[in-house]
Image (cartoon, rainbow, N blue to C red; front, side):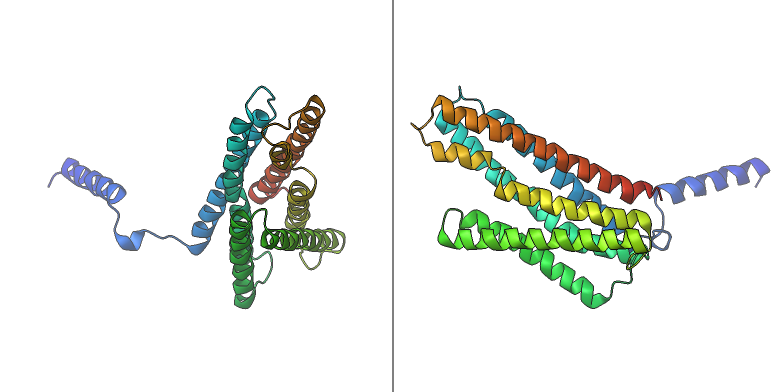
Length: 247
């Protein structure tokens, strides 16, 4: 074979390897998989939440019939499940990434605990949708609020202590991220306690709209939309710290 033939054969082999690599050449580590799942959860969380934001912008329109506004409200309640479940699952998925990156020594038992919490919190959100407006739903809602309050407090304390002392988390950007993560819990708690425009719409009923009530609905909706922007800023900051790791 001539030198030119050898070059052509080698070039063909490289093209073949690039197009159809053998199985032993494909290496997918667990960290890449968890990072991909983490990214998907962020996408579905933020994407669905933007849908809620648009629903709020529409439902405050007093020119729409009550039936239309009620339909938008019911649709928003179903959309709301997606960001809530994805946020619940971000915790255990994030624990895998923390261990893979060596940010904190997470034992297998702690991972199991994290997944148990994530799955149970997801199930709680589904149950809240099913039992909404009932005595059971009210009890579950109270449990959810207590959980959000305590989890937010936990992450804020751990993160703030780590920023100040370097322990239990030594990496500063991750410590700040924990503080922001705790604040997200409290922002969500705000949605569940104070900022509830869809509930205000449903309480008016088909013939209960008055100028005073519409003014109140517009006010709480605007405040909720502003609160939502705070959530988006926190999510952006958390994502920035996780990706850029600036310090």
